[in-house]
Image 1 (cartoon, helix red, strand yellow):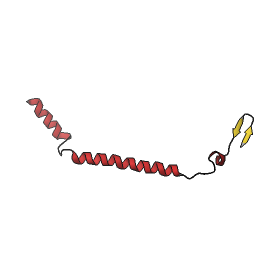
Image 2 (cartoon, rainbow, N blue to C red):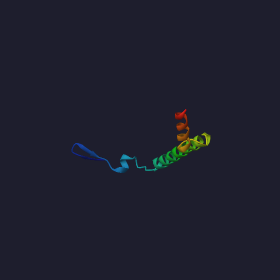
Image 3 (cartoon, rainbow, N blue to C red):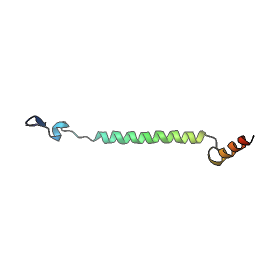
Image 4 (cartoon, rainbow, N blue to C red):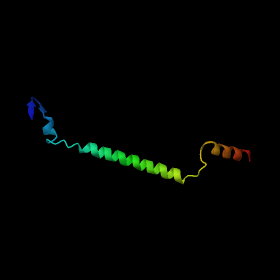
Length: 69
């Protein structure tokens, strides 16, 4: 630690207590993978449980038929 007037300068090793294990990278990477897997599982289960004819032209034709009645 070095003092220059009112300022105190600390080296990187002193500020981080001398350790840089890079564990944060692994935690962030693992969290990202879990988020991607969770979102994919939600999307896939939603797609598998929905009716076959949804969206697109099938819904447009159904809406047009209801308007004519």
